[in-house]
Every structure is written in C-alpha cells, then in structure tokens.
Length: 172
Image 1 (cartoon, rainbow, N blue to C red):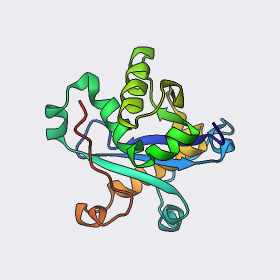
Image 2: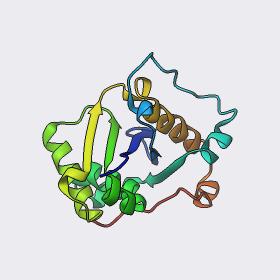
Image 3: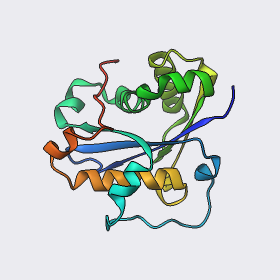
Image 4: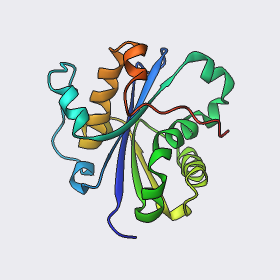
C-alpha cells in the first residue's frame, strides 16, 4: 500500500440527542502525532473556512437510532458509516482511525471487522486507535471535535445541505 490515509473521529453532545459524529480525513501523518495539549475550539470564527479546507463526513445520531441498533454494534455502525464514502481510498491506501474515548480491545476488533466488511477491504487495511482525551492530543481528532461542536450549533435544515453529511448505514 502507498501513502496511508488517516481519520480522526469525535462527537458532540455525548449521551444527549441528537449526537453529531464527525470524521476528518487527511494524508498528513503529523496530524496524528501527539504533541502539546490542544485547545478545544468553541468560538467558531474561521470554522466555515476550515471546513472547506478539510475532507470530512458527519452524521446525526438520533435517539430512535439507538433503540433500533443494538448498543454493542452502535460504534461499529457509526464508524463504518463515516468512513464508507472513502472506501476506494481505504482499499488502495489503508486507513488509520483515531477515536476519542476509551474503547475496549474487543470493541476495537469489532469496529475494524465491521468497517473492513462494509468497505470490502482486507482486515489489515484498517487500524483503529482509541484513547481518552485524543481530542486534545491528536490534531486530526481535535479538528473532528471542533467541527462536531460547530455542527451541533446549526439547525437540522442547515446540516442537511452540507456536502459532508452521510446517512447511518443499515449494516447491523
């Protein structure tokens, strides 16, 4: 595989609905390296411009989605839905996914297996990394956090017109 593709994923409004999950994509490895503590950006001057300069996808998770999708499969469905539009790149280049939050090793395997199945990729093509506070440690996840917060402040009508909105896949 040539140049690896990267994704940082975070959500807004965790545990309250609707939740907005965002994946920000890049070819730039340095955006995945921990450095100085990053600020959580909540003032959105310049965020609209930043959206145009980044590849991203996002979805809206509603309370009825959590009733329909088994809890143990939800994170796999969300991640798969967010990365599915990039499946051709994933198959040719691979994808390292950085998730904000603690995730058990069993759930990481489940997410990877579901995502590789949905994207028709080899199991080795997708690598999942997770940890608490990645939104203040990893620049790509920090961007996902910023965009998720920005989208959370927008109306559903506004969000439905955004080029990055994806549907929750029915893959469970």
